[in-house]
Length: 94
Image (cartoon, rainbow, N blue to C red; front, side, top):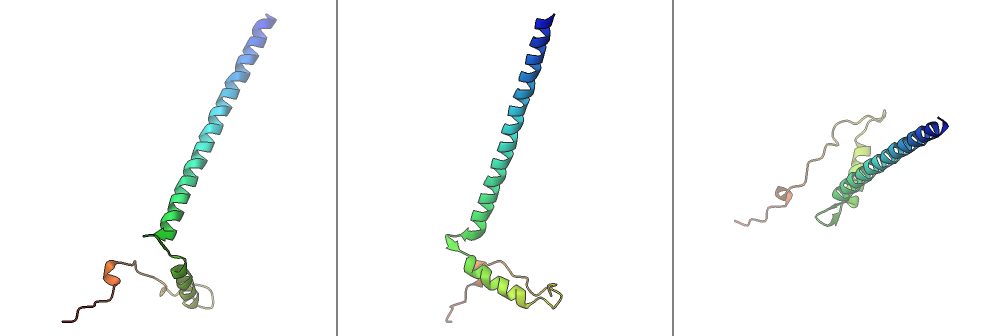
């Protein structure tokens, strides 16, 4: 019957529409998670211990530029160590 055909077409359209909504929600969720991870990583790399590291990065970029040869390849001397408490100068007077 004609009414059954319209019912089936309507059900198919609703089914496709529902899955499209699910797909949009899944994509937005993944984008939101990626934005959160990016924001966290950015926050951790810039503000460590409440200190802005941008000035240190500029000095590191300048030293990396000076250690590359004419072809632009790095010479390997631009490796930097992590800052630790042991990097502080020793003030023992004995």
